[in-house]
Image 1 (cartoon, rainbow, N blue to C red):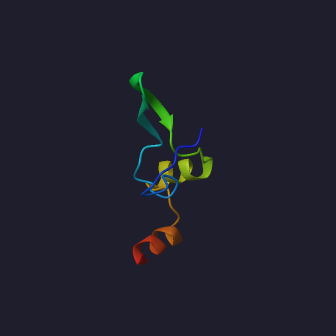
Image 2 (image 1 turned 90 degrees about the horizontal axis):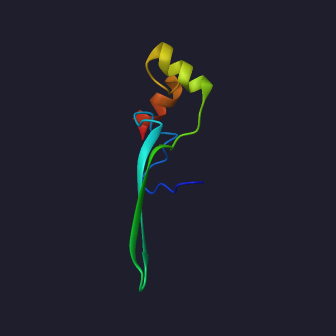
Length: 72
């Protein structure tokens, strides 16, 4: 299942946790509004390279990627 992100892609915002709590509401005319929540929904794909980079160096982006973000 893909979750659309309007403001930012979680793959590029490394300060976000890889899992999230998701709330969903569905309105059905004549039946009511239904809601559900799910915990630990993965919002960023696994990356062994970036996980190791964060573990050993404290950040998930390469130095070149961090410089490009500062320029934006």
